[in-house]
Amino acid sequence: MQIDIKETNGVAVCNIKNDVDINSSPDVKKYFEQLTREKKEKILISFGAVNYVDSSGLATLVEVLKMMRSYGGKLKLSGLSDKVRGLFEITKLDKLFDIYLTEADALNSF
Amino acid sequence: MKERTQVEIENNSHLLKEVSKELINSLKEQGVSEEVIFDVHVGFEEALRNAMIHGNKSRPDKKVRIEIEITVEEVIIVVEDEGEGFDPSGLPDPTVGENLLKESGRGVYLIKHLMDYVKYENGGRKVTMKKRI
Image (cartoon, rainbow over all chains, first blue to last red; front, side):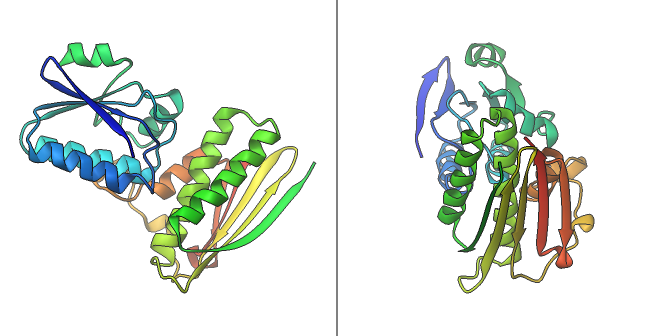
């Protein structure tokens, strides 16, 4: 699993570099558990390099959202491919998450 | 053109990925669109994951049987586990109310929406899926 992180205007921008699936989800979860332990207030997950997400990946993202909500943190997503975004739409998770087309759009919305 | 594969694998997520990769490569070789391949990819892996984790309860002594047939018109996939079975009609809708925030329950729902045909048999242990290519 590879996630690159940078701070931009007080937002932790996390760029996931691999698929979020049955094999990588446990590590992705651990990574964001650490960030939420630090109570990061603003997190943007960038999906520009993610080609594939499965139900375990979706479940992991729901867990991250719940962890952040527990302390009032804000989570946003950006850069989803049409097909990955389609999975969010089918499962209605697009209603739960703040999803933006580009990283810049997401950053401006915080 | 017709390609048929039958294989039996152990409960192992890395084997799941290997079998899935072979299917994707076969579909790519047949010139199937990226959009359709994505749907089959998700549908197949969700079915395998359900069979291994929910069906076989990740037990090392249980196996998953897979049949894949690729014709000119469609890909037909059968996944069968050795578990106790389940009633797919009894699953809660993961898109409604508080279920949206639950961590499980999206796999079967995704299969239903991404594949053109889905049928459960043998008490839920066997699923047959079809997708036009």
